[in-house]
Length: 362
Ligand code: G6P
Image (cartoon, rainbow, N blue to C red; front, side):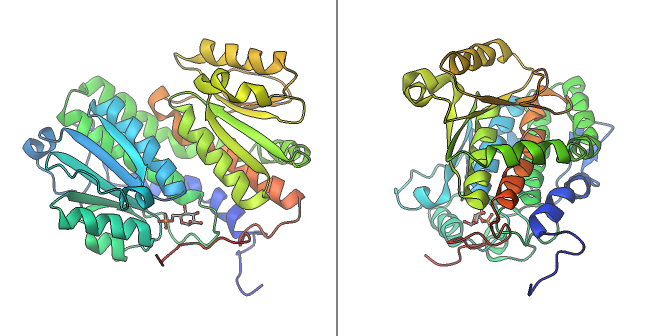
């Protein structure tokens, strides 16, 4: 190979295993143990400006967009500011209304994705305030923004994003904590979230120790032609990212659907040939999710669960953290699932067909 994965078979696997260290770096020096908040040096938002934000709009492409959806949920939940994510590629074409009291955030690992850069430029032209959540220091998007936060994830070589995705979710948790403590998040809740964040690297290690089991499951799942990924609320962007990873590297068709919407359409597809990967954290929606699993099983669909409580051969259990942070740990088994399915099928994991690491043209 023209490149070297430094002792690992593939860069994708190396980068999956670098996640505990990448998360350490994303957190380093950013948690404030006195006021139970987060400090983000490149942000340049004083508390009065932060309080004046009425809405947050997050833009990115591919996995950066899904990580942005995690970020929007974190900001809305912890800071109680209405927030949503949209593909930058769509935003730039639909003549969006740009508001002065909306905070726009562009997400990009490479900092060079043309659609995201064009969205930032259009926003700036219309007087929008844009922050960057970017990995590559000094990249085009980082330079074009009014400030922002670097991931410090280190270089990501594999086309399918893993550590940059996780680091983005962590940076959004820091940003949500920061905005939350200026808005209505209590010191006690701030401390609880900060402690949850500090626990992440060790918990990621715990998930990685289950790699052999997940690899065996992936080798078995590689026989299917299509899979469904379902989740509710915090589990929904996780399901979308899981389906994206599987498609990108294994070429198995995967569709993500909100678990709550299954009965409004896709339930018609359920059969023994279409397994469902279900994101089932132990949160306030556990009972609802279990009844959805029951509906799938009643139609003889195989269910693979990623969560905290389910047990059995088709269950992957992740360590429990604060529920608000569930969308950070739950994707990690899905990265391993996609990676090992692709390996089982003999695909070029690091350079999947038809894809580029960053799409820098229009
Ligand atoms: C490409 C890659 C995706 C990536 C997306 C955004 O389409 O194939 O894996 O998520 O670009 O990349 P960025 O560098 O902006 O995060």
